[in-house]
Length: 355
Image (cartoon, rainbow, N blue to C red; front, side, top):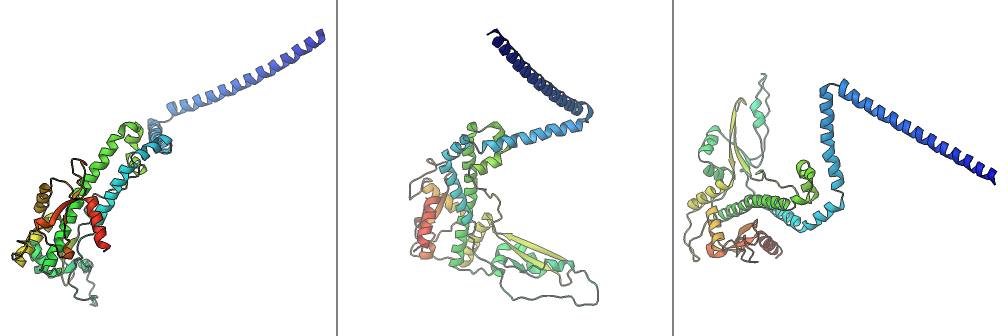
């Protein structure tokens, strides 16, 4: 019995010795690793120039928010947040699409087509004729003489109508009124859309980590499902009067941009040229910026279809609509105009197109 106890004690002693040896080895390995890390840090701190330390710190600052955002945008917390505003996100994107459709509403105006030709210099002299490269031929560029180009800069409306084949009739006036109406909706819509998105982001700002709002705001906007908003005015057509000297040594041009200001002036100019007469329905009104504001104020800034107003929806885009469309014989008169929100106007437009 005593021998068994001694044997057990010896076995336990051996086991404890092995365990102690293993623990000692682990401690020695850890201490070596710590010493190695300390040596590396000391090497970085004391042997590398300050620029190296700055680069290391900048690298950590650069990577930290990106690593954090990588895991945050894949978290369940972010998914819940995204789902909670999905309805508002869709509304913003729908309005963005509608604005994109309005940008393409301008009438198809082009310079009078005088035919195609090509000029080739076959002289024996080595002339540069660099300005010949500006002899651009497209639907919005009218190649003209120096006098026409100069006069176009003085009387742009007159020469625009004359050389870009704008007919002085009711149809042309109606077309430009429609373009002005759409372009004003685009400019108002861009501002309202930006405000709507910013207010929505501000409302959920407290639920989003500081690292995300400070370093990954653009990525946050995309991850939430918002589409890019084009705030540029590249959709506004530019018509050019281009003069290039016969020798190709000089050139100049005059650009006429169909902005909201110029559209207002063009509508008044066309109206004065056509000299409208009183009709059975009364004197025809001009769809200008002033008339748009008047109709909205008359209707208390409320949609005549769904009764939604800017008091109900602060960033609501309101448009002026012809009750009887121009294509169906309707006139631009105050009794034929009404205020519609962009959703109702879009729905009405789709119904008319499907008839």
